Length: 320
Image (cartoon, rainbow, N blue to C red; front, side, top):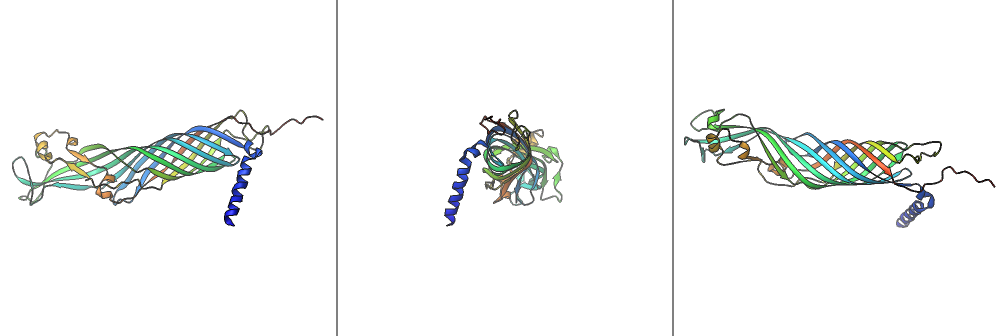
C-alpha cells in the first residue's frame, strides 16, 4: 500500500511539472561563480595543530528555477592551501654502542633538534556539485553535495634545525660551533608532492539574489523582460565526509649519513641538499589518522537567463 501511494505521488508531481501552466514557470539559467573561503583539514593527529588556510574557487553552473524550487549543477576548479604546525622533535645519528665520528676521529652522537616546523599543502581539485534549494523573494538557499576530484597536491615544509654533539667523555653537549657542524636554528625547506583521497562533502549556501523583482507590469515577483541577469552573494560551508588521508610510513626527517662530514668541509653548504622532510600526513605520526575538509566562505554568482516563452501575465482583452 505504501509503495502504491508513493507511485501515485510521484506520478502526480510529474504530471504537474509537465502541465502547460507549470512549463511556463520554468527558467533555465547558466553562469559562473567565484568564491573565497577559510579552509582547514580537521584531523585527529596528536599534538599537531592547524594553521590558517584558504581556498579560491571558480566554476560554471546551470540552474533550473521552477517557482520557488531551485536545481543547480556545477563544475569548476578549486585551489586550496592549508597548513599544520608540528611539535618540536629530535633525530639522532649514532648511539653509545655504535657512534659516529667527527673529523678528528672522536666518537659522538650527532643530534638534530627540529622546531618551528610548519607543513603546508597546496591541492588542486576539480569540483562537481549538485544542489537543491529554494528562493523566497530575494533570499535563496541551496543544499546538496560536492565531489572534488583531487588532481595534484604539493607540499612545502619549513623548519629550523639545531645540531649538537654528545661526546661520552664530556658532561655537556657541544653546541653552536659552526666549524664542527654544530649550529643554532638554521632554516631549511623541503618542497615535494603527495597524494590525497578525493573529497565528497555536504554543502549549504545561504544568500541574497539581485536582478529579480516585482513590478506593476509583471507582478507575482516575475522577472522583467529587461532583467536577464541575476547576481548572488552568499555564505557557504562545505564539510567533507570522506577521509582524505592515505596511510604511509615515511620518516619525518631524512638526513644524509655524511651530513656532518660534508658540513665540516663546507660550512656554507646549502643544507636543503642534505635534509629531506616528509609531510606529516605521510609519516607514522599520522598513522590511521582521519582527515576531513572544512571550507567556510563567501561566494559570488552571476546567472544569465536563457530565452524561453513565458506566460501572458497581462493581456489586452478583445472587444466583442
